[in-house]
Amino acid sequence: MDRRRVLKSAIALAAWYGLPSAPLFAAAQASSNIADGESEAFSFDWLKTYAQDLGSRPYQSTVQQLPPALANLTPQQYNAIGYDPDHSLWHDMDGPLDIQFFHVGMAFNQPVRMYAIDGDSGRAREIHFRPELFDYSGAEIDASQLEGQSDLGFAGFRVFKAPSLTERDILSFLGASYFRAVDDTYQYGLSARGVAVNTYADGKQEEFPAFTRFWFETPEPGSTTFTAYALLDSPSLAGAYRFIIHCEDERVVMEIDKHLYPRESITQLGITPMTSMFSCGTQQRDMCHTFHPQIHDSDRLSIWRGNGEWVCRPLNNPPRVQFNTFDDDSPKGFGLLQTDHDFESYEDIIGNYHKRPSLWVEPQGQWGRGALQMLEIPTTGETMDNVVAFWKPEKAVEPGQALHYAYKLYWSALPPTRTDLARVRKTFTGIGGFPEGWAPGEHYPETWAQRIAVDFVGGDLKHLYDNEINVHTQLDVPEGRAEEPQILWVEEIEGFRIQFDWYPTSDSTDPINMRLSLNAEDEIISETWLYQYFPPAPSEREYPPHPAANG
Image 1 (cartoon, one colour):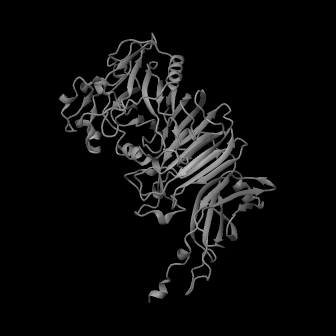
Image 2 (image 1 turned 180 degrees about the vertical axis):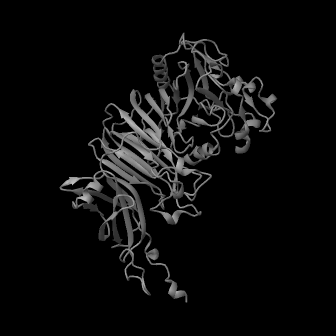
Image 3 (image 1 turned 60 degrees about the vertical axis):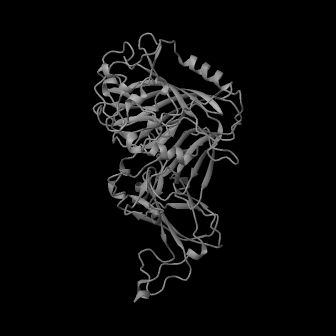
């Protein structure tokens, strides 16, 4: 199974919202009455031991052959399968949270076993699949074919929170180890994964480990926090996970504690993988083939490095696959961000890109040396995730090891922490070679150039401008020539626009990694802008025909 097939299957469910739910919780006593399995002892220590033992033995796939009635479902039919709210996990608890389960079907043929943990005893009971948990009336499925199929399991689960208990979910786990959550807009965007294996490793097929079991602790009465445990399995490794999930008013925060047990050597292990979509933005307006000015789930990779430096790397829809590595030692935080939340920036009433959340990773403890790695894949539209970012540890991953990582994930409009330095607002590109504000006459300049502009806002910029303190740029462009640099104060954003023209000095179309920061009085006053620019082919380095040439 390749990346695009996995992503396409997940995107086919674009609804991931909105199955009916019902009011919930009362008192944290017994497990839900839909848990019909035998009572079993459970603890996180037991799960870690179980995963370690599993990782010491050969992998055995649990992927199943589904009945034709499920295997041949169309995305529309799959989305039409409803869940009966009277059988949601915490339906009888009359509280602010509830859980419903996804049906197996289409490419979702990995049975996921679900367990409810009793609030008093701590013992777990399995929740077996049975047709009466679902509503098939809108999906044209003969439910009688599914009777007695208790081993079908589920495809995943979703969580609802008051007051939208019958409307839209706030987080979901579905497909391999993919999961995602929303902020107070209730709009899904980018996804996270439990782990990534060989996403972009020479000679290696990418592997998609899967969560195969989940255990749910019964939450405290009235609480908007709950704990889930998960078992992960794949040909290369097994893993034990604990998710403490805080469903707050304006965001979802996940505390994740995971233990990985490799079965074999892994060339590229991705910790905290994030998957997003970037089709076009202010620096790639020519890639917007629809009337929308921008189309993306995320607009940048943000890194708070271990040495304290803040880095902004604008995302691209590249002309060819690009893989970038940012070395670091114990990063303080990183994430894929959606920083522009103005409707006018997208003019989109279907995708609602202005409502999509950012995802910020806050490592717990010292992760040591490694690299934040990012893969960008060309895309012609908005239906395919084409950006993946993750942390790769420097140390080799070998069978028999026990790896531990703890971190927090913040699903919110903006990260919970921001630099006090000036921040990158936006990046722009367009034709250059002539003064800003000057409309070319009958002739364009003889030499083609690309203009690049970067807006910086926040920090001490307003103070520096008001007190006439000089602001300087530190610009590094390793290929070609950067000329006509300008530092312009923009009153409307209370920030500086740095713009320059880039002139090619060769026919190369290799990407150029540009770097820019601001300083004043011998101090760095901004985050670092890292931009990967793709020079056009020599045949495309020309200005558009002048209107006068057409009569």
